[in-house]
Length: 231
Image 1 (cartoon, rainbow, N blue to C red):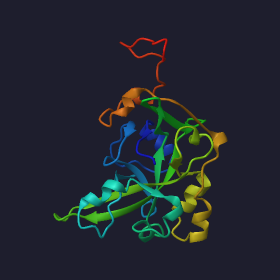
Image 2 (cartoon, rainbow, N blue to C red):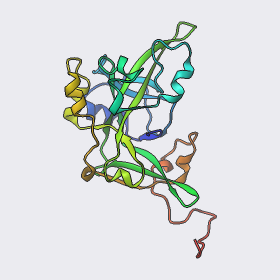
Image 3 (tube, rainbow, N blue to C red):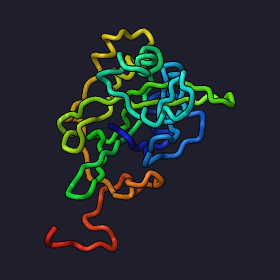
Image 4 (cartoon, one colour):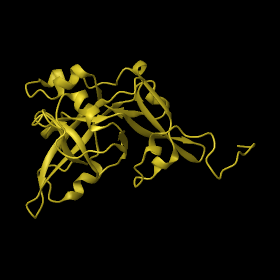
């Protein structure tokens, strides 16, 4: 699963990386969580950043609650499983990120780790999107992150990871003429040799906390705590 990620780069960095315009105000995000709104790049509007809500609401949904469990879509079944099979061939998107978080159980605690490219560059996670009209006639645009089995690096923390695309695969993912076979060929774990991770600061545990400390390396000891020789 992927239920938290960061995009702590400026709008200038993002516009240069993707070669497109940011037409709405943007501020770096350090702890993006489900149900929140952030930037994506859709195949419908590949020349600009769009702001969508994380948590796919299928267009045919009767209510918004369907999004509660659609933050991720397993890459192995997106062509066969509803509701993803209804959008994978026509409504794909890129989800810019510079790191994602996973939690590893250590003793009685769950320890957060931030996983990123070794270069610390922005990368694209593959996503699917849809538009839903609520009872008031308002259009809500939403997305979900496609996931795959973890590569050997991410597997040290978690058994799943986002589908990370290289820049050539980004073009294919947004190409409306791409075949099922072409798309399925890029649904695979990213090269572990090009990735790294570190233990993140525990403030990221709170979805309400979206500040630079979230992407800081965890200190050996937090203020107010003491070492226990018997741990």
